[in-house]
Amino acid sequence: MPIIKSAIERVKTNEKANARNSSQLSKMRTAIKKFEKAKTVGADNVEALYREAVSAVDKAQSKGLIKANKAARDKSRMAARLAK
Image (cartoon, rainbow, N blue to C red; front, top):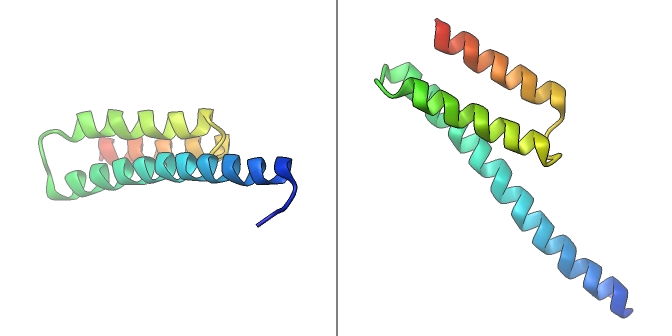
């Protein structure tokens, strides 16, 4: 643990940001997995899950958690999977 006050504050801030970012990434991954599973099973709410997953990917990309190319790649794969 740091001794300097500003360093202590940075540790607290970094921990908060880390928790926030981890949560956001987890939500994105969960949304993608739900879509994939629903598509595999053949559920009837696949399109709604697709929209949620794309939204989660876009949100993660806008917050800088994933790069633009990864977001585009993930969305493209999901769109191809939906059309199949």
